[in-house]
Image (cartoon, rainbow, N blue to C red):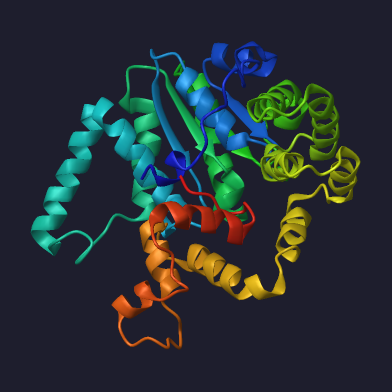
Length: 360
């Protein structure tokens, strides 16, 4: 349930400090029932900011979070998974709702048999249970944090925004406290009929990005004159997208370490595309022809695995070929093309993916 959240980076030191002072965030916290949007480009740091906001939330409220993940398990990207997760987090604080749901479970198990074999919860009934809990089941204010709404798909996103728009209006009229924070990319989902609050992350994170870049350059002992030029060019080109910086900055640092002239590094930075998708293509295009089959194999294992693979599992997978010359797994692991240990495999992952894959 926490897989996606655990894979999201925590805010870097001294970053996101602007959020508690942002007018929209302050107004959202002070409003008894309202909706806050964290919007931004892909890779701008929306998930990290939402995770930071969740940790900063005053503890006098009941809180729950959900992180949609289009590349994850079915329950990570569907409304059913969302309802199950939020109920799981809130039901311990809503005893009447919990008792009612437990009774339904006992009755159905007795009549139909084992859950997940003979029957299962439907999306409709969990939606109904959550609606009741949010409006009537708790004696404290409730705040929900929902990340990457766009990764749920347009239909689910529209339904959820409509649902919570209705619930917030009703909570206001009944004197209840219900607030929702959604993060999503810039695309119109649905127009709300009441005022909500919005934070556009790339309009706010320039100080965070500058601090991150300078800290990384300083930690790698890049001379101040070079560091200032690199930082300025990288920050201008990134246009507020943290992921762009995270991919390009290590390459610039490596170039400095190998003695590449600063003019050549800056020329290469200027030539890089600003859009993440185009940057990914440009990075992969740099892989030499002789390394591409192994890079492709690595990325296929990462992308098409049913669940995230450990370094050891990926090392084993990379040792096996579709048409192996060796006849046993032991022979594959002992072949000259295999990787000796997990430490070397981590380096290989970074090298073959050119930084697009990372070990956590």
